[in-house]
Amino acid sequence: MANVADLSAEIARQLSLYSAALDDEIEIATDEVTKEAVKELQQTSPKLTGDYAKGWTRRKGDKGIVVYNKTDYRLTHLLEHGHAKAGGGRVAARPHIRQVEEKAVREFVRRIEGAAQP
Image 1: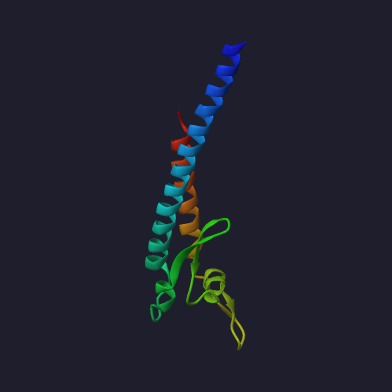
Image 2 (image 1 turned 60 degrees about the horizontal axis):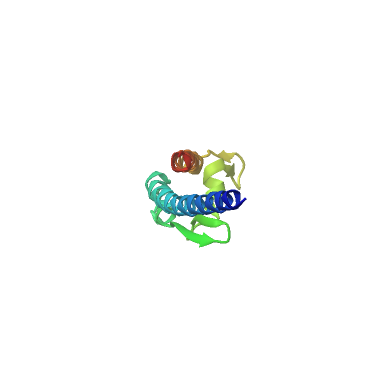
């Protein structure tokens, strides 16, 4: 019976080590992918004065790292989806966030799946 207990303890220890290693890889991947997303958003954002593009940054929140526009956060939805003009008509959408988000998600998933492989 001692062998079964030892085996159980060893399995639990190995799973704990694997979990810790995976946690570290997730943290590294999150950091690198969000840095790249901020950099890409700064390059691909519409530039009138350049303030909007320079405003992209990231911060650590309760649920991980959040990428957001610090200076002109009110413009993100308007630029991404377009909006109505005061005198009638519409301003065309200038999509730039969705592509970066989808690319970041794909890269993050690829890195985590690679780290999870034995």
